[in-house]
Image (cartoon, rainbow, N blue to C red; front, top):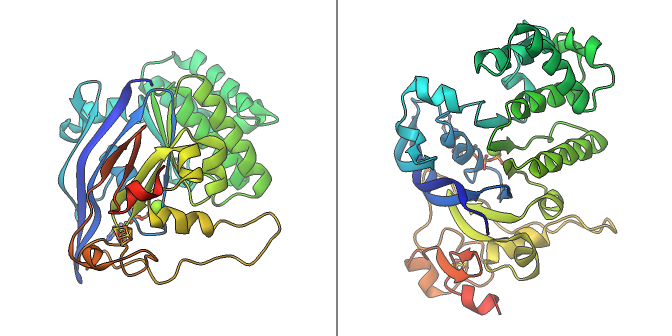
Length: 323
Ligand SMILES: Nc1ncnc2c1ncn2[C@@H]1O[C@H](COP(=O)(O)OP(=O)(O)OP(=O)(O)O)[C@@H](O)[C@H]1O
Ligand code: SF4
Ligand SMILES: [Mg+2]
């Protein structure tokens, strides 16, 4: 097993809203190992994006508030770095790919110039060399005419092309970690498959990836390990094969059951609703939807227990599920 690249410890993030305090991420801890693709899954609102954005201190504050937590990278806590020091890490050593490429691209500048600027700002190349590298990266991203595309403004490109430019921006500086938050949700199936192919290529270049997606098929094909979040907490962690073969948390089992099947059969829906982050139920936060719930689950919150073999589960019954 490789060494931890980034170690997230006891992360708790809340939002102060008119309705009360929203607990978005609650005591979350995990490591991203060197040269791995780590998947992060869970239903909408469970805290995936807030977790990802917290790693680079991108949570808007207010209304967001970091209650506790550390993000240890190369012996330093990123959450206590000055803005200037953090800027040296952001984009350079740890970069993000968002669902909407326009979050990362400026509408006012030609894409080649934007890529070149990123190289210049981080001192990776002189002006002429930066422009040449920018074009080369567009080519690597499978963009058919890199020279012409480098002169285009983002609005002149299709969504898939914009996404490739953003991925080039994220990859170009040879980061140690790329955080990809639903990177292809807005794209068609073919383009999406090409983007995942590119991400897999990057992993061969020894870049780690934290991949957030709703698509368990993509998780199966792309990831080494998986984290499952529910209601602001990690409820299961496992190597990808173990998670699919012997899920150690009823929520994971329900998620797997709700995967679309090849024969196009009727989709299974997990019963009930995700609880409001304003007011989680007492005990296990999954208890009102869990087919296995019993009395203790309504009184006590199960801790995230170590099951060995790189597996963790926050369910009182975990040991019964794992052989
Ligand atoms: N700016 C904000 N103000 C108030 N609440 C917020 C804010 N951003 C996120 N939240 C809340 O934090 C919780 C976690 O949100 P998050 O965006 O991390 O979910 P997610 O798992 O990424 O969901 P999705 O799959 O829909 O992207 C949700 O309850 C959400 O409503
Ligand atoms: S602790 Fe209880 S309610 Fe929670 S997942 Fe396990 S069995 Fe279900
Ligand atoms: Mg999200």
